[in-house]
Amino acid sequence: YTPAMTNGRKYVIFPLSDQMVELFEACQQQACDLKRKEVCRAQLQLDIQRVYAGARLYLTGSSMNGLGCRSSDADLCLVLKGKVSFTRRNDPINVLSALQRLFKSLSYVERTQLIRAKVPILRFREKGSDLQFDLNVNNTVGIRNTFLLRSYADADLRIRPMILVVKKWARHHQINDASKGTLSSYTLVLMVLHYLQTLKEPVVPSLQRDYPECFNPFMDIDIVPEGPKHIPPYKSTNQSSLGDLFRGFLRYYATDFRWDKQVISVREARALPKINSQEWRNKYICVEEPFERNNVARAVHEKAKFDAIKAQFAESCRILQERKDLNSILPVRAVI
Ligand code: ATP
Ligand code: MG
Image (cartoon, rainbow, N blue to C red; front, top):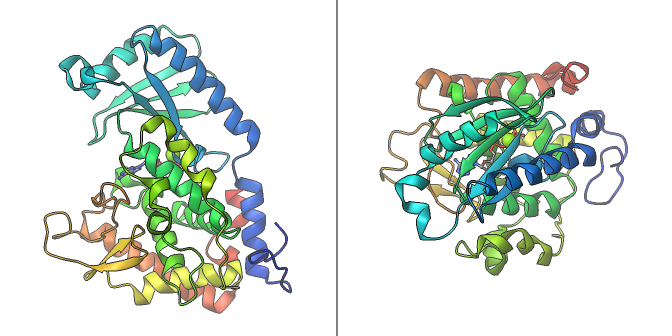
């Protein structure tokens, strides 16, 4: 990345874009971070197979989708195959309880914690390190959408730095925590992609629309990671700098997007009208999961949290317009 790189061209210096590139380069996940996660995954898979023969463990989320930070956790999906997946023994809570017992005997795992959310997870750490894992059972949509996001991350050079800065910005302002009623990272990523897809000159298209065979929702899970390999880079006519895109993103959600009337659909690369179905009724923020088509922003169910999110977009948009310095809304040195 060179300063203010836009789609392969170098522009004159734009301070905001430079600051975004600096933050991105300092924070993005490194090859050694991924290696460490992969070594752990492989060992865990071997240990789990002693109890669940044939089980497969997949790294998902930002560790694999190209949108991770050095500090990102490692999301894991355990796939138990065959008819047995639906027996009581293979109910996710029962599986995670059994794994919790197993993990207590493993020398390289500590602090296991079973979290009974809509998608239950076992949270644990690699012993003696700050590497955290979140493991779910058979939530295979997470594998499909990980490789969809990875394809978006590869579609244009500006996407990774843009998303990393948005995540850091949201975290700094405490609006990036689904367990506290604000936005999950996954929701934020889809919000950024939606903005980039709906510009007059889009930065990215809908990859599901343009390459349906690569993202067939019924594709065997073992070959999902291969899908994105067949997608050529997208040639956008949009030459905006990173700084312009970030400012535009804040402005779009501060002033243009109609939260009460629109549903974000990355699958269709447009905002869909909000119809009165159970999925969208009485929801403050509607963001469609690209495969399951349910609302990934359902954690935002308190009016006060919704208002705080909107207020942050408006406030940051206003400040950045005046100051044109990333530090005015995100202290770069402090978050690196
Ligand atoms: P971070 O770097 O902050 O950990 P992340 O990209 O890993 O970000 P998370 O929100 O932690 O994002 O989600 C991890 C993964 O879990 C996502 O990439 C996605 O694959 C899956 N996921 C999360 N929420 C949903 C959801 N509502 N529906 C389907 N899959 C989801
Ligand atoms: Mg994660």
